[in-house]
Image (cartoon, rainbow, N blue to C red; front, side, top):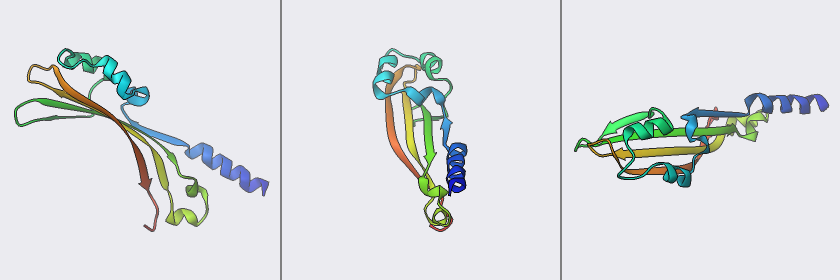
Length: 127
C-alpha cells in the first residue's frame, strides 16, 4: 500500500501544473491593468513595453487595431490518477486571463478589457 501511495505522489509531482500564453499576465488583475493603461493617452509602444507583443492582432472595418493577450494556467484533475476512472473522467482545471486592447487610427488606446475566467478541459478517452 505504501508503494502505491508513493507512486501516486510521484505522479502528482510530475504532472502538476501547466501554463501557456503571455506570462506577463500571470499576476495581472483588472485593477493592476487599469493602473498601467490610460485610455486616450497610452500608445501601442507603451502597451508593448508593458506586456510585450500581442498573441493576435486584428483590425476593425474602420481601420482600428485590436491586440489580444492571453495567459492560461491549469492543473490536472485528481481523477487523472485513478486507474480506469481516468478513461471516463480526466482533464485539467484552471484559470484563463485575457487582455484585449483597442487602438484608434493614431495608435492610442481607445478602450481595453481585462478578464479572468475558469477553464475546465475534458481529455477523457470516452466522452
